Amino acid sequence: MSFRFQKTRLSSGVRIVTEQIPSVRSVSVGVWIAVGSRDESDQEAGMCHFIEHMVFKGTTKRRMHHIAQRMENVGGYLNAFTSKEYTCFYARCLDEHVSRALDTVLDLVLNPVFPEREIEREKDVVVEEMKMYEDTPDEFVFDLFDSALYGTHAMGRPVIGTEESVRAFDRQRLLDFLHRHYTPANIVVSVAGNADHEAVVRFVEKAFAGREGATPATQQRTPPPSRKPESISSDRPIQQAHIILGARGMHVHDQERVGLSVLNTILGGGMSSRLNQNIREKYGYCYNIYSFVNLHSDTGDIGVYMGTDGRKVDRAFKLIQREFARLGEKPVSKTELQRAINQSKGAIMLGLENMSSRMMRMGRQELYYGRYYSLDEIMDLVEGVTSQDIQRLSASILDAERFSDIRLLPQHHH
Image 1: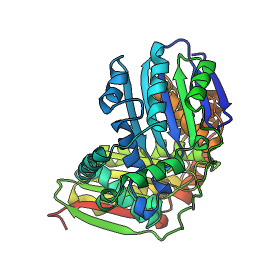
Image 2: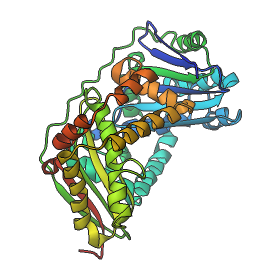
Image 3: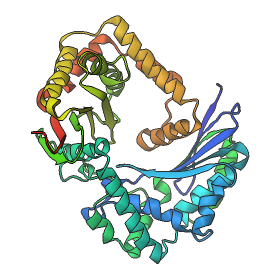
Image 4: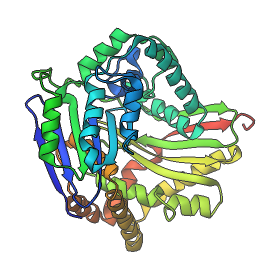
């Protein structure tokens, strides 16, 4: 698949990254803002996510229902998400509608009006979304995990905020937050698919006309202080225990991050991983078990999630710790390492057939690294991981002493 990566920085500070792939008929357009829940004060908890909802309620150009219909009328798709470190608004469509997609998404970011009565209505919606998370134990357990790992630091709070913080928002505070963070220097436009770089640049330039000289990026992020491992346990009216064994890991700039991602595959990525083979297949302890790695700008974490019978929780933690120890004590075989490398490469390659995941990769790389990693470069890095790397990383990172354990337990088991 031939493609061309190009990058332009406008005088206003907006960055535009595109990957032109003439062989497809679709295009994915994303506008990224370098602001997430960790950039909120305690009083602002949930504001990024709330603003992400509110921009869909109307802009100076369009009413709410027009925004919703604009992409769907041409068979496209419009959505957004907020994370701890960035917010993204994106659209997918056929290539002939690329200017409509850009126009729609940029309009959301640049011209939202935050109608007063919609603010109150949307608070109810977001509170319902909070309740939905609370009712989804395999997601909610990750909120407990974050607070164990990062404590009262903003990284330890749920992206969605609390009912108390969200109920207190008002229009002026939302607008202040928007003007403070949605500045050209904080914005990256990422486009993948059958679209022409120069045309995208011209379009974005027009959209930002008259917004020159806006304030530079002002993210003064403080890394979360280190903490002792914790044990957290909470009871719920649920059928199954949801547990996490996890610890601080690496940040996005860590040289060893590629080794960590291959280690994650060996430990708990897919059917042939150690956790799946030794805990699900051998003992039948769970239906769902996997390991995960999160890399943020100045911190990160690693861990194992598992859903199991409330009475088996202690044994389950022991089995997971046993897999940690084995990886640190004994080098993985050539076959197992090669399988994990192929699996990692395969996941990247398969992801590249999807324009949205290409657009997301480019956007994230620009936000975190200010550069683009080509496919060949990534493949070489993955190929370069050795069995010694895996053992060394396991011995230091999978040290059970460093790990916090989180249990969300069915009420009747103790």
